[in-house]
Amino acid sequence: MSVNAGNTSHQQHAASAGDATAEGRERFDPSTWAVGWGRARKRNVLITVQVLLAAGVSGGAVLLAYLMDQGWPASMGEIDRSVGNLPSLLGQTLRSPEFAPYLPLVLVSPVIHLLLFQWLGLFRPNLGDTRPFACTSTVLKGAFLGSAVLLLLSYAYGGGATGEATPFSPLFFIYFSALVFIGVLLAHSATLIALLSLHALGIGRTRTAIIHGGAQPEELVDALNSPSSEYEFVGHVAAPDDAGKDGGAWLGMLEDLPALINRHNLDEVILACDPGMLTSKQRLDLAQTCWRMAADLKMVTPFHPFFQTSARPEVVGSVPLLHVQNLGLYATKAQFMKRAMDIAISASALAALSPVMLFVALAIKLDSKGPVFFIQERVGLNGRTFRMFKFRSMRTDASEDLHKEYLQQLIQAKGVLADGEDSEGLYKIQEDPRVTRVGRVIRPTSLDELPQLFNVLRGEMSLVGPRPPIQYEVDEYQQWHQRRLHIRPGLTGLWQVSGRNRLQFDQMVQLDIAYIEQWSLWLDLRILLKTIPVVLRIDQTS
Image 1 (cartoon, rainbow, N blue to C red):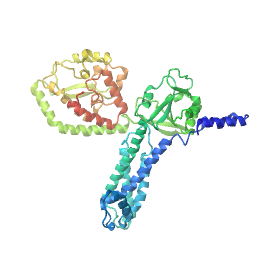
Image 2 (tube, rainbow, N blue to C red):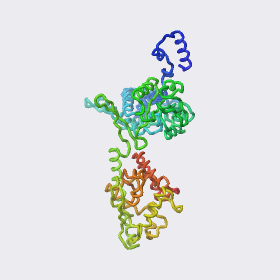
Image 3 (cartoon, helix red, strand yellow):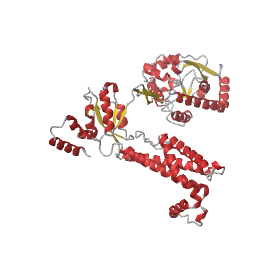
Image 4 (tube, rainbow, N blue to C red):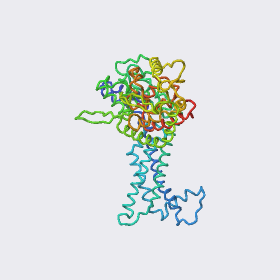
């Protein structure tokens, strides 16, 4: 129903019932009506299509797996294998006596897989993240769990209880699992690709407004306006006591939200201000207005942009609470996975590279007097110091004064590099006169850093993380620089693969902080893979 039609209806009612109460007028106020069949229609259509496709794939996979395992039924006799005759052949297979034991699976399999996919969250799409194939792990779990359930059912009801063999071979279930996984993944991702294509044409975008007070949340606005976003940013709604004087597309005030939702056909409202600036009644009205009018209500986490979070509802007495859970690098599970990867890779690398390390050690010993290893105190996790190992690449009488002076100038100048040099000088000064002949070879190739694998194995460092600073470097840090000390230092990091040797100091620290905030195991693996061409100088930008 259109808003104009609603206005006409409201006017006619007011004319015929002039003595209507304010409550009665509000009941017929068009600003309280939801438009069409609900603003969640895009999500509903998407989920419906995904469910139907997944059900069709699961049922069809039974037939294809049977053909892959058993071939065409013998009862069909001579068959015409032409492509045009394929539908007829599939229909005959379904009606054949050989396929009769498999028919129950055609009906049961879609139900089981749909329940599992729903339980795993496959059909709860986040329209703010429509990346195809991002659901790979979820589909993989659902496909093989579903096959396991069907295998158990076939054993229980197909003769296993009476001691007879199940009519289905193990190879059939292997084929079936693979077909369900590939089919559902492709079908699910195809719907997202189609949705992204519509968004690229400006069709079906989620119309969104932001409620806030004071300065505009520029980072959020930029994200909503991104070409790759599924959103269409409509404008701002001013929170109470804010007149919206700082420019921008202001739609109106918070108390006018019901009318604004219909007037601008909003699909979603984002609360980007501190909820504490709203009274309890205003918060209740905001939530109920969005729910009543089928507009999604989202909130910017108060911990943004410090780390990734997830909120889980809890109740203490009669008071509802939100348990703020960390999903990033500070989470216990994340730390366990990261540490397990560190141990596995560092131990394997030490075993594989031991001949290279032995050769480097021998070269250092023959080249100059002094120990093979250079041991230096560095600052690690939460400011704790540790002894970091490196192959010695400088003379034993080398002084740290040159590097210390350069580092102080670099940090105090807020990242403006002196004499046009690049950020390699942060740890390895260009044309350093203290470097030995072997050092000129092992420093550019990072061979001097291989002994740090022992630090990784000991738990003092990680494979990926900020580079471990020297104490006199930390003494020059500004307050925000300290955040890079909140995790274990690493052999390589985000800034090394994001323009190594061409970044200024503050830019490097910002990348270290971004790594902490955006951490995932997949990000660690990507950084490790990107480090290889950087070290080997395959990447010419390094």
